[in-house]
Image (cartoon, rainbow, N blue to C red; front, side, top):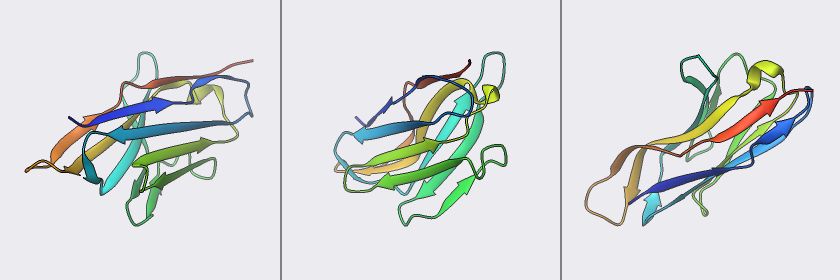
Length: 122
């Protein structure tokens, strides 16, 4: 069974930086796209950024120019470098893999991690 495990969250002051990681495991052969989402208290889940296995990236307007998504295909890991953090970036950040190709017969779909808390506060 495919699992995604996030790490790297924490408390940071406004203007600071954090780097999130999300490692996938479970007989993985390839993951075409990996993405980050976030959910703040009382708000709907929001897409943050996505990256393909070839390295093409997309960002939500709210984080463009401040966040950078990257991945290591050999480690099945995606990263989110967050700079110039603002209080409104406070949320639980989750990674997602819409489709995962494994050693099993059929792909796994819509896999989510458990999330990591990011709190931006002075």
